[in-house]
Figure 1 (cartoon, rainbow, N blue to C red):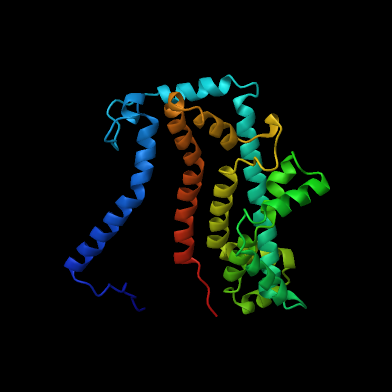
Figure 2: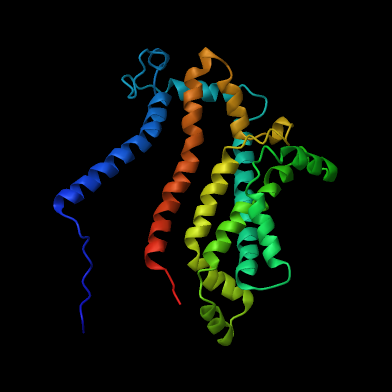
Length: 285
């Protein structure tokens, strides 16, 4: 029984130290905005407007968060309603986009049917258009079918995001056809192959898609299609607070931290799983 030794990188100790120093330097630059935003949320007003500005907080306080909740409680719509709207739209939009993108990508990647290549070309072409370019046609369509000022206008467009299908298809093409054919010979049904073989092996793709979808939906005020105060999302309500001027600067800093927590938390959880999956579940022909 042979023992496989782990291959060591062809670097000296000085080279290792240099690599770590470079990584620490770039990592510090990337994490600095997060540290600054977090410290701003706990600064009193005199530190927020101090010049030259400081990164770290000297006299931490929770007054900014108390001001934020007091301001939100004065609205005639409960603060919990804004949170529910945001969580509901984000959850439904993310799940719907993941299901539709993965199923569509599976067909495009593993089946050859008339018009399949042209359809994928259309998807890649759609990637070139910014959301601001399609906002007017999207609004006209929503108004025509009567979805304006409803939840449907907020999360249904996310189902058809071309980035999801493109990302999932590129990963699914790396799954060997021999593996799927062997599953069919063993009697596996199409849905079982998709859920038990294909999806586990493209885990990095759909975790990445979840990160993009949550980030896009969570931070979207949805002000283009939703006008009723009962249906408005948390980002829209918090934007109104930050527009209050100098007196709301502390609450605005707290708003920034609140809006950062969920996307960063999703990223931290998914990022570790992505690295683990990429390292341990690769399949080659």
